Image (cartoon, rainbow over all chains, first blue to last red; front, side, top):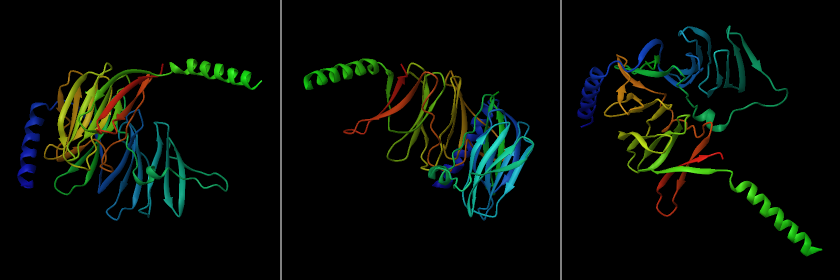
Length: 161
Length: 163
């Protein structure tokens, strides 16, 4: 039954696609990740996102408006990673490895740890468990292409027109 | 003395009441079909809501700045894990439904829906990390709340102006 529904859905989707293929314009794509768990648009056409390997080890990736890599950090941990802020000028993220670590990244990719003396920095509980995604900006948006077969994920930038 | 203090306090309270009574103005309300799980303000006084009934069937309703329906999609997903509303402005709405399989749609302000297409798989508007995406409740002039009737569980979206 589920196979019939899936097939019917695919056919309807394909038909729908053919009828209205000019809705949005794909600009660029990036990555072939096992999974992407959080995307944050920078408001200017770029974005940062959190990807995870099949062993759930995380990475933070920041792309500019042309889809060019600005910064990448890979972690040997499956614990939470949270994007705090992303603009075209800076990225701030937090990740957990022994303790929460906050990092500020400049436009040239230079990463600087954020310290708070003897205090511990952390993120709200919900932000660590369920990282929020903000995927639109003034000119376009980001979508996640889940490939068939295999289910690997590619990030795609679309312009609205 | 005690009477005089009491009178002064009463006058002060009445004065405060007058000062704050006009703080918010209800502009319009919309009775939703089911429990409202997400509201995304369009930035111009309207919003889009995603509502989900007890069977997990979820729909999308786009309301303009006067609270009138300008687009509705009855059941866009039956999946309890699907994120629905991906973005909304006064000129367009983006959402991801699962009519058989996940599909992202772009709706213009006339209410015409078009799929967002990429080949080789299916598109999601944002990661499926939670059963609903983030809400944006406010804009420059006001905000939205969900009024839940505790007797009937009916959800009503209410638009307030700041003044």
